[in-house]
Length: 326
Image 1 (tube, helix red, strand yellow):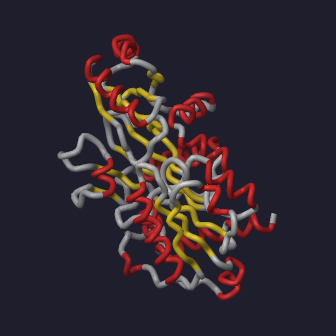
Image 2 (spheres, helix red, strand yellow):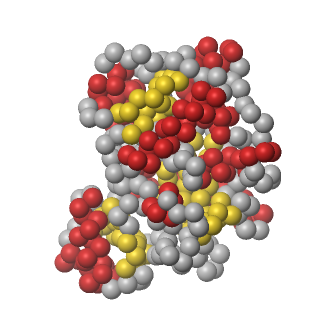
Image 3 (cartoon, rainbow, N blue to C red):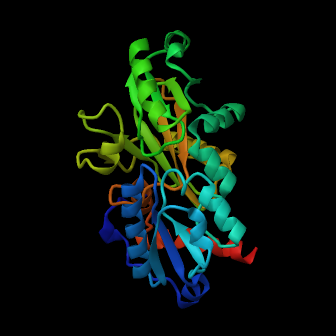
């Protein structure tokens, strides 16, 4: 495993044949979700990398009605850099599929499923994959009962938001009721799950291969790897190599691949996992359009595998050619 220094990786250029085959590429970014600002950063990074690799790409800031994006397209395919609802939840994927326009990442069903953390956990559970014990919460009145059924501390999260938006750690029924009120403002579906105390890891997937795992440790200013730790803080600690024994990292990578496959994802994504005090791994969620900013984890994992950012985005885009030929 190589380390993650930029200098180890040569500049990447797509071949003339590949550039011709890809045609004109629209990088969809922005959107109207709570993750708009992160999406704009991801999209600009992807756009710059594609152009640097020689691909004919341009930016599309997607606002309002998604149907308008396919009314008179001036592009041959789409690199989706939209995070959150609208871009990551199967809606855009359905529209592009219906219009016959190839696009990056997972298809409609897998995108919709992965965006819904609650239903993703039902799938994990049904397939025998380890995920923290959980409940769905539909009113504040359930707080006392849920605290008695699950073992605090608990994590409260909107079921269909990303980037750790709206997540709270709670210990008591009162804190749970308060956190539920906040989460419900973001999503009618609220997920409550047992909090796993221990190190957090993320595994990026690229073309049915698990990249080197990354160990995550937010600074003491953060209760966990939250939105600020992900996108704004400069003191978040990323470990590549992740610090696990080789056999444990292989076990972690295989679990991430299993999770990615049972949800039905394709080409690229990221799986977030916790490890408890006994060394057991627990699946949290699958991300089908992970961040591609300067703080982002998929580019970091790719670098550790010897894949530069330009090559990474071109490889993700190249998979759309298989759809076009299908």
